[in-house]
Length: 118
Image (cartoon, rainbow, N blue to C red; front, side, top):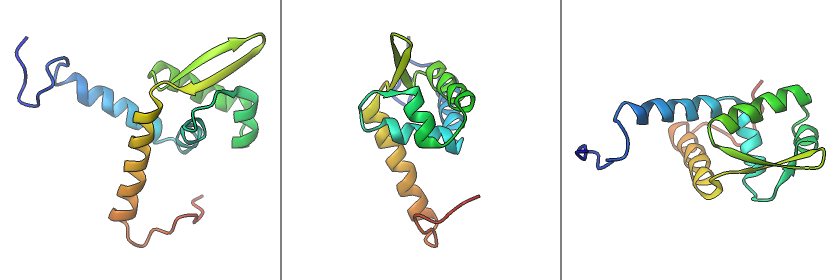
């Protein structure tokens, strides 16, 4: 397989934008973004803990986790009746989230962290 100019030989150049757009689409959900921020600490979190911390219904959190699992963003482990989640590629996703936050600060100088958005 020839190496494209981008230097990414292992992906069809149409596949990269497709996969990236799926990742960004998932993270465009504020609840999914918040969930990833909770998981970025690296410790496993039980679904009930995520539900309580996010203040959302279990069905909502479960649907978001399913989407994140389908995109290989999170991994899970069942222990008895409990399911625990962690980020699959924590350090890389953490960098991505920080880059997005830095971009917001640079692109919108009037942005004030901690301001509520409804």
